[in-house]
Length: 106
Image 1: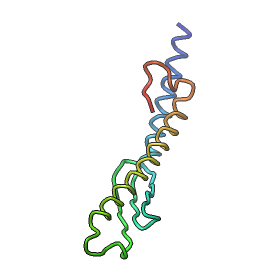
Image 2: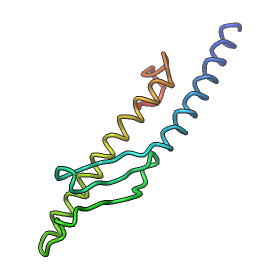
Image 3: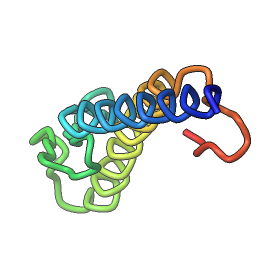
């Protein structure tokens, strides 16, 4: 039974670390860019887009499709960063239990 109590304590500690990592992630602000920085998307750790900056030189008649593609690419860049940081934080929080069967994949 002593081993079970130790295991439960480890699980509790891991749960606290995961909650702290999630809180840290939610406070992150990431910047995605496309078109050599002509389009920038600011993304919170929650996944919410908080700002889109578009270089005024892109605002030409007939360029709407290209601008849309650049906004999507900038968002994808920020999302990749968010996913990488999330996986890093959660794996660190899970410690030696990361990757074990039954544990969430990060």
